[in-house]
Amino acid sequence: MERDILITATRHESWVAMVEDNKLVEIMFDRPDQGRIVGDIFLGRVEAVLPGIQAAFVDIGTEKAGFLHVADLEHEDDDDDNGGRGRNRRSRKYPPIQDLIKKGQEIIVQATKEPIGTKGSRLTAQISLPGRFLVYMPGASRVGVSRKIEQRDERARLKKLGKSILPENAGGIIVRTVGEELTKATFEREFKRLRATWNKIKKRADSSKAPVTVHREAKLISGVIRDLFSDKFGSVIVDNRDVYSEILQYVKNVDPELKDRVRFHDDPVPLFDKYGIGEEVQRTFHRRVDLPSGGHIVIEPTEALVSIDVNTGRYTGKKDPESTILKVNMDAAREIAKQLRLRDVGGIIVCDFIDMESQQNRDKVLHELRTHLGRDRARTKAFEVSSLGLVEMTRQRVRPSLFQSLTLTCPTCSGRGRIQAPATVVRTIERSLKRAGSSGAEKSILVKVHPEVALRILEEEPGFVRRMSRYTKIKVDVRDDPLLGQDDFRFLSGPAETDVTAKYAAA
Image 1 (cartoon, helix red, strand yellow):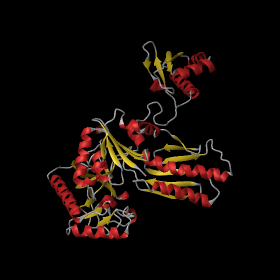
Image 2 (cartoon, one colour):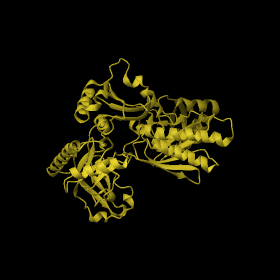
Image 3 (cartoon, one colour):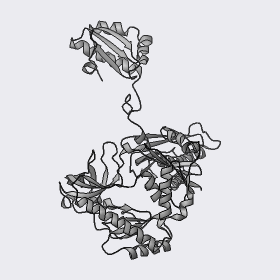
C-alpha cells in the first residue's frame, strides 16, 4: 500500500491529508481562529470540587472552565508494558477528590480534549510531553512501549533500553512506534531535551499566576511530522516553500534517512486539486454515502451520539436475500470505518445494519468492521451485535468533528435540519392572529411571509385574509418577503408598521 502525506498551507489555514493508494483516508486542518488547545499545558486554578461526580472544574483562562476527573489526577501508577494510561482507570478505586485538591488551589494541567458544544475542555494532571521517539511523563515512574510494536523481543529490548536511560525519580517514558530499532544515544538525546522542556515549564509555572498557559503544543503540521512521518510513508508533499524548508530541516536533524521523501509541489495545478481532496472533503458534509454494491448508509450526528443506518437502496442482488443483505452490510462495514476516520467523528456511535438471520454472517460483518477500525489512529471499540440488531461502538473524541469545525448552526432551521411546511406556518399565523384579536389592542396588522407561504395562501386558502379579518376584528393584509426564512413570518402593526411578532407569535 502506497501512503503519502499532503500538506497545503497559507497564512490563514493549514490542511494535512493522508492518502492511501491515492485515496483520502484522513484529513486535518487548523486555523488561527480555531484556538486549538489539545496538548497545551496550563497553570490553572480550581474553581469547584464536586464530590458527587468525583471531578473538579479548573479555570485555565479559556471561555469555559476545564473538566478534571479524579482518575486524571496524579496517582501511583502501575508498571505496565502497553504504553497507555491503563484501560480500566475509571473502574479503579481512588481517594475522594476532595481529599486531593481544594477550591482555589493552583494546579498544572494539560488539555486532552478540545471544548465541544457546551462542554469545556477535558484536562489531566498527568502531564505528557511527546517527542519524536519518546513520550516523557514527569509524574510517572514506568517505561512503556507502544502497542503497535508487536515483536516480543523488540519490546523487551526497548523496555530495557528505556530503563537504562531513565535516571531514578526522573519520571516515566513511553517508547513511540517510530522508536523501534533505534539506539541508546538517540534515546538519551531526546530524553534530555524533553526533560529540559519540562524544567522550563515548571519554572514558568512557579513564576506565574493562574490561570496562564505555560506551554503550547506543536501546531498541526509540526505535530504530524513529529508523530506520524516515518518510513511507512512514501512521501510528504508540501505546497508552501517556507513550510517545506522547515520540515526538511527538522527531518535532516532527527531522521536524515527520510529527507529524500520530503518533496515540494511545484506544479500549476494546486496540490489538493491534483489528488481530488477538495471534492472528498465536501462529500463529508453529506448525510448519505453510496456503497459500491448500490446500497447506501445515512450518517446522522445528534447531541448524544451518531447514528448510522444501512440501506440496500437499489441493490436487490441475484441470489437469496441473506446473501444480498450480507453483501451490503460488508460494504457498509468498510465504509463506516472509513467515514468515521475521515469525518473525525467521536463519542458513542450506533450502527443499524440490515437484519441478518445467520449468526455466522453477523460475525463476518462485525469482524470486517473491527478489521477496518484497526487502521484508525483514534482508539475505537465495537461491541457485539445487540438483540435489536445494532452494533454499538465508541471512538476516541479529541476535537470537534470536521463537520462541526467547518460549519455553523443553520439560522433558518436552528440546527434541526428541517423546517416547517408552508401549511404548518399558515396555521401558526392563524393562531397568532387570533391571539392578537383577543388582546383588543390592534386595528391593522400586515403579515409578511416567505413567497412559498404566500403562494400556499393564494392557491389553497384564497379566503384566508377575509376570514381572519372578520374573526379577529383586525384589518389583516399579507405580503410576501423573499428575505424571510421559509418558516418565518412578521406581524407589523398599524401605519408605522411596528414589529409585534414576539407579542403574539403562537407555537
